[in-house]
Image (spheres, one colour):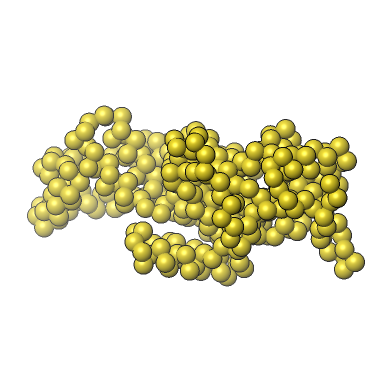
Amino acid sequence: MDNSEREKFWDVLKNLHNNDEASMSILTEASKRPETLCRFRPVSEHSLQQLQENKLFFSSADHYDDPFDTYFYINVDQMVPVYEELRADLLEGNTEFADKLRQIAKLTGQEPEIFVSMLSNGALDFAQLKGQLMMVRNSIQRRLFSICFCEDPYNETLWLKYANNYSGFVQIYDFTCLDTFMCGTETACLNCISAREPPYTYPVCYSDMRYDATKYALGIWLMERIEKQNNMALAPLHEYVKSSLMWEIERISLIKKKCHEYDQEWRMIRPAMFEQRSCVKMKPRKIIVGLRTPQYERRLIVSAATIAGIQEIHELYINDLDKLDSRPINV
């Protein structure tokens, strides 16, 4: 997928408001996933164990190497005139507007007169709100979990960045093969969220324009306060706010700075938001060992891949056309 196709996908995602069949069809058409995606890895105790067990762990956005990951911002200043305009309408006796607010209050399960009175008489401390929303931004990054993939197993930038300067390995996953995704196939999967709610994989869009996540931050801020009150009467409002934030997780997770566009990244996004790390079980079709991987680490990689049942074990080399290529390792 080239950058223009990624931009078209982003335009579709930005304008998506529900998840009905027609909307999902448009999104699927705009995000046609390649048959194979790959994941670059350095050699470590954890990466070898995960290779051996066919596991991939989700990582939260605050642990990615890019400090600008989830490239969004929260614009509290833009809320001040909007809020003051709403209050002015009420204070000036705009009965039509007040009636609309009462309808919204009923829809969200609130007492209409209390809802209107709070807006009429309650002046927000925007300086305090700004500080609280910036804390929400950090909270969002801790709760957004994804797994990063790439389209090209011969991507030189990623061999340098994520496979320890060509001394690691790359795992290649065939998404057309039914045996690739292993979640839900074992007894232990019964209580696993990855088996109950399979994650979706989307392309990342690269841009120097940040995504405005003010609405999402406000929604999270409001839901957290509703949850702390532990009042069942507020449950309809909680669900209403939650439903209004549909596709915001995807929009925040799939935007990165333009300078990273050579990564050709795709992301598998975990649908549930909480701060506990989880994993999926996926079996690679093939692995490629780096051309600078030391012999003893090559043996460890080959051993782990063999235990995992991976049939195609290759090594990286530079072919006669002076390009990266791979060939089978005799095991």
